[in-house]
Amino acid sequence: KKVLKINMKEKVALIGDLILDRYIYYKSTKLSPEGPAPIVKRLETSETAGGAGNVAISLANLGLNLSFYFPYSKKNPKVFEKSLVKVFENIQIKLNKIETSIQGINPIKIRYYVDDRQYMREDNEGINLNKIAVIKKELIDEIVHSNDIVVVADYQKGCFDSETLSYLISKCNNLSKPLFIDTKNKNKLAINNAFCLKINKTEFNFLYPNCEIFEDDSIQLIKNKVNQSKLLSKINNLIVTLGSRGCVAATNKEIIYSPAAISDVIDITGAGDAFISALVYFFIKKAFEENKDHIENNIDINNIDFANSGASSVVSKKGTLPLDKFFKLTYKESKHK
Image (cartoon, rainbow, N blue to C red; front, top):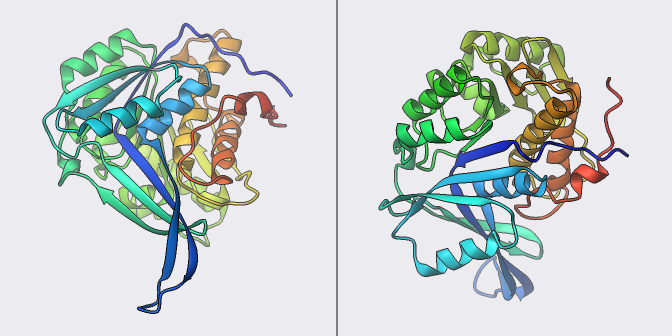
């Protein structure tokens, strides 16, 4: 096992939507005589940061020098602020609220579990958040100028719209700052010319219907489809995660396939967050070890394998979980060289 090292002076900015994930656990005692439902006893309630908040904690746990920018509603109740303080307690992150008066811009997702199985999920959030952009171009300018690498975790909950995302890509390209994007934006024009775009198969199929990936597609066919889409959108690195099949990455140098390193899948929540976090960490590590400028650094099979392992490490556990501080210490470097 090899300890992975990075340059702690590198400034990383994460921009995205903060979600609060609440879990309520019950134990069933018997079936209700009134209908097909269990009678339950509440066991415990827990809260954690979801969305970009989960990515932030993962990046911080991996040791990055992180500033987190996120929309925050002035109308959030005081109990939300207390939850925010608690979930980021003892985490080394510079929190930067982008304050707004828009209500519900910080969604609260409540998951109800009965006997360790999710029974239902309640989403409390604002309306038409995907049509809002709280972040302004002046703040984007400031963030890009003052950081070495920028990461976007865009859940379309009010932080970015297509115009601001496209502006961020342009700004990073002009200043040669690597930009890693994980977005649910459904406008293909919004992600043109991105340095690195990470999306899942569902998101890929929506953006590129002419290259739709089907369950029975061979890996070679998927590689071709991903590379064709990369060229179409002029993306330097297009990474498509395929769930249990792993992921395919089309870079400027090669087309990579990395199978999933999954044993038992218990909960897929947060897998994409862990993937993008591990991807960014390894990218910085590689540039540091090889003494390269970030913009000249290449995403390779070892980078993708590490990201896959990050995703696998969280899906084998229950709930929304970030990468822990020990993941990078226990990771076995890939046999690919």
